[in-house]
Amino acid sequence: MEAPDMREVSARVIVALTAAGRSRTTIKRHTAEFNAFAGFLEARGQALPAEADCLDFIAERSGVRLAGLREPISSRHAQLARRPLMLLMEVLDGGVPRVGQATAPPVERCPARFRPVRDEYLAACRRRGNAEASVVTKKRAADQFLAYLDEVGRETLDQVQARDLAGFWARRQHRGYAPKTTGSLRSALADFLRHLREDGQIREDLAGRLPPQRYPRRGQSAPHPWTAGDVRLVLEQIDRQSAIGKRDYAMVLLTVRLGVRVGDLRRLELGWFDWRAKTLALTQHKTGVPLTLPLPGDVGWAVIDYIRHGRPEAACRQVFVKHRYPFTAFGSSTSVGCRLSYYARRAGIVFGAGRSHGLHSLRGALAVAMLQDDTPPPVVTAVLGHAAANTTAAHYLRLDTEHLRRCALDVEDVLDAEQGARR
Image (spheres, rainbow, N blue to C red):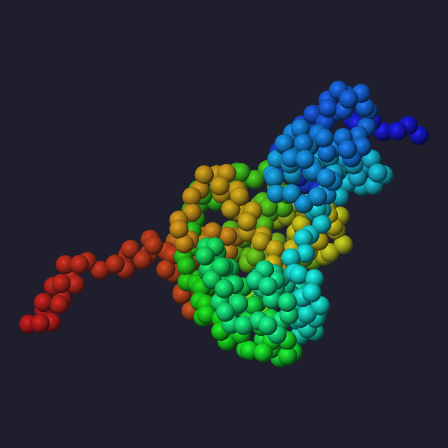
């Protein structure tokens, strides 16, 4: 069997990228890197590369000299040059290019002497039935605090004092993290400190020393006031020829046309669709209440297009999956809504300060559109899947500014009424 040449090897990588649903821009960038690398090898009189050639090419392209292909780096230029070459070398080694895999092993931030305690804590979280997404959040908080203790010279946990917690927290506060991020850290760190106290690892109840932390929950901040024109612009930005674009298009349509929550989008299964009756039936993850929705033609065909022509082969039952190997379903901590922000930026939509603009905000757009079409509030409540009508009133009636204007009182009438009352 003849050895493959650069053209054949790079073509295999491009096929893998296409199958994984990578955008035309990504494929174009990889192709450009392969062409440049082929010219680099030709100048050296080589047909196929060794790892040393890859490192020399990366240094020439980015100015960063790596000791190995999987060395952790922060330079974006070096990362862009390295990623195509790693996929190329995986093919040359006789394997399948692992599209979507990390280019470098994860960095262990927890000091070695504290890892047994950290690992026992995470095992206790799992025994308590914590979701894996919660375990990941708690691990991150524990690692950060233990790394800080190592930095300030604490050799053992029984040396930890309240001032160590104060110093760690002050450093976090000065970094300008969002209130919700800080609140999540506080909750996870308090759980870790309580575990350490109950286990006898620390002498003092430090969880009670954490400052109170409140952050606005969803509904206390107004969503972005999406218009029909905004939604149309966003949908036009989605590349429906790519696999990821087909997925994103179907997910946005399901939210903006049917009001499906993000948690239900993650769980959506093909068997929940009744194609003959043109309905979607599900039990809502948030409320546990069954919900049956009519399925418009454009929404149904978008889902079918993704399943037939975009969805990779995956073992899970969920319709929408991550387009990174091994193509699993979205987890509870996956930020599905970030794709909407990406398309909105491309459409030139600017979000106001303090306005929520994730996929959930599109439910507000649907509610307003229905109310402005004089849809009875009970119908709006049913479509949005609310357990009670007062939930709809509290969160969405305030967004219907057109009807609220009709309720506005004339200032002169109010003043006249006050004067009449005084007489």
